[in-house]
Length: 313
Image (cartoon, rainbow, N blue to C red; front, side, top):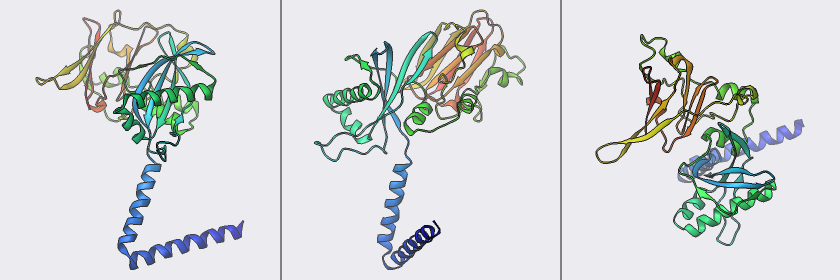
């Protein structure tokens, strides 16, 4: 063991000596070498990014709605040629729920160049989708429906959940629940406001992450036993005079709620969650990425309506 460590130390020392010699004798080659190492290191540390979301159905072993998040990831190599297989990575299936609906989400990653080339060719795009579905069937012994549709949103669930799934980040379930379910309550913000039932607030940087947060993945069994009603809501995109989208506005009707302190609000860059204990629960995937730091909320007591305004990124 000691001999092995000494050998490794000798090799490292020799390597650094070679770099020093190269820097002195051929600065241009040295610079190119360092740039290449930095480039490869950056690629190794790259995280997956959402591209599009598909909706289909699992037919067997149990029928269920399936969302497939197609992602681009620089760590996935591109095929060596058009005749070689296309590499991909399939994440672990995760069951989620919105109100009483239960569905499964699976993340699939391709090299960015592969997906970008397919964007210009519908046949190639369909081939990649079919390939992902076939891999899911073979890997998890699922039988999928042959039909699918492209969702209006780019990703189902949060970006953070997708990254953890594909990158294999292990976190203690209790810590994960406490960390990801630590939501901003309107009561925390309104405590310093003289009229907490009719106010406008700016969500502070420290309370809302600019990265998408998993809002629905970790729910305790006691929460799922209580059937919470989805409130009526209206979502609209506000545009300027040139029809350029500026912000997303959501109006949520909460009959029977007369105080803002009963509402819990969580906002991430691509989804929103509103909960009123044992009464209402609304989770929405936003059609565009929003600026969480500039998001504001207003509760109108007379109409029992919560208005959330989210500027677009």
